[in-house]
Length: 259
Length: 259
DNA sequence: ACATCGAGCTTGTACCAACAAGTCGACCAG
DNA sequence: CTGGTCGACTTGTTGGTACAAGCTCGATGT
Image (cartoon, rainbow over all chains, first blue to last red; front, side, top):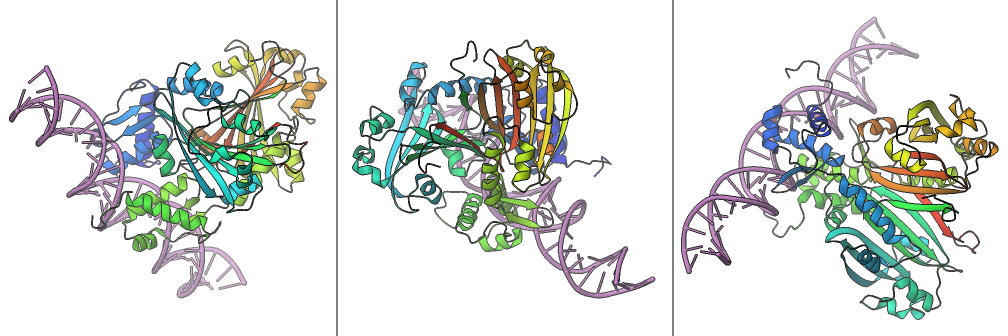
């Protein structure tokens, strides 16, 4: 091409130029970028090349795209606000109190629940110390906050638990919360093992959480143990752009102004 | 098109098919996928469509691509192995024993350390309870395991700590580890506050960690507290495809066979 | 024996074209 | 005024082509 020494591919140059303009406030948060065809004209590149560049920006979380509308510069405000909310929402000592916590925070919770019998997937079976493919109860929860998809949560209970806690198989909610119900049924959880990983969402996850391409998810796998054995395993898929996990280790609460 | 009821786009169907085959061991970890042109013939799709599908798998971390070679199924061994390693590496009571732990595991550690005086960035200042822009010591560490970039770690120490622990400002390593050095200097950490988030890497991070497009990073921010106040804040950027964070909550260690 | 080159494979970049699908607003009929 | 249609715009998907760039390996020549 004409430029001469162009070390970088054109789509990366395009992305860099737009990134700079976004940083400099030419396109402030919430603003709409020029359309693909406009950018195509401006940079002298084909629409495909423009799309490649824009895909980079989307994957960095700088912009989002919506079919029929265009590309919007993301605002970071939302990110921080919801992050701290999440904290209150899930961690204060074995809450299971998603609904009440969200309500108390002045926001509107909404969830759909699906209960199935499922053979244990290998990774779950390992954590529950049961045989892969053995009978488990899967309670699958899709949660919203103010109509924004928040997380999907799949909790597996080993089959042997059903004798002691039969209501887990019933389709509806358990009013007092599953943790409390389990405790009442003589199955108390005395410890948790948490694993946190990240990856890009599968198309299915992207659909459920309504996240654009390029936003990673946070995978939170919590295995709850009674005094004798693991009693449940929860795999939560969280929007990476809206959530942050917090852990306190040691005697932080007892300290003076520490946090 | 002719197929009739194809709810999903073709490239997603293709990705789903390959994902299933990878899960089922048709393409075991380390194996090479058929080339784009072969897949194109097999699925009756154009090379563009095939590439779109493969890009999904890459972004999910299932496969990697290298120009001139092809697409390789990623081995989960590395992932899992390093995950548990990571655990030992950082968590068992204030290790700071990265070097020794990695060596004991039969792997070769390598790190570069940079020590600077830096005004505190706003987010760090907030966590350290000092004024933004006030003097801090930044110890920046770039770590490798077996020559694979592993993480970057930026630890900030508040300026007031320098009177009691002057060696923190010296450029070289601290042989006994910074945690032990701090304890010896009368600054014992009795609690930590951990925050874990995820996002796509900046170009700079992608360069340092040598991660391809589509792989997110795990951000681990640990604030260490003495009995009176925060004494340091460590921001670790980990390759999301090689790392997993594990936390034990409650009395897991005391249990019988519970993990 | 050994370095060098090149054919033939791979993925990466770039271009073009066409249609599907989603959104919005202008317009028109009731 | 209300409600629906339709057209003009947007991004999403799929098809094609060509060449660049990176890797492997065998043939070639010294």
